[in-house]
Image 1: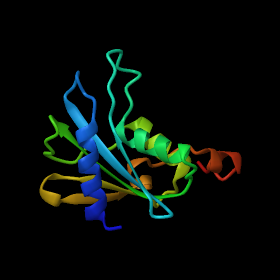
Image 2: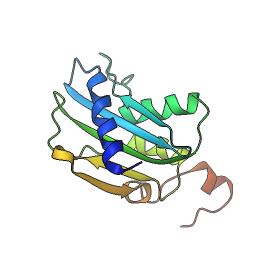
Image 3: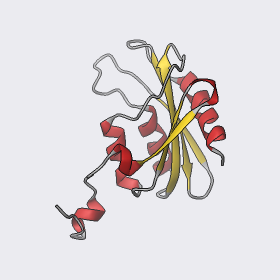
Length: 141
């Protein structure tokens, strides 16, 4: 799947967002190793901490369906659903990605007018904690 198609699916997903408090709609499209794609949107809550991000929604849907191997995710967002620039994943979402993905997992940050930027998980979450690294004694200082 091309980055452009994955970003288009993320843009489509942001229209499903439930954001009565912030007005910031976020969409994500997660590409699994088998080629299937899971879309997610952010879902806000009046208490704020129960709010769920688009990236985690996509991951949790995929994991529920039995997927554990992922290639890439596209993310986009903006006030009132208008994309004006990159909308990178929050720290919690980055840590969820780390749970299932390797350093070379690709995150596409979709911008306006079909533009996008590609980053790796290692770039967005350097020196990250993962059970795999720390349980195998591979962690180095």
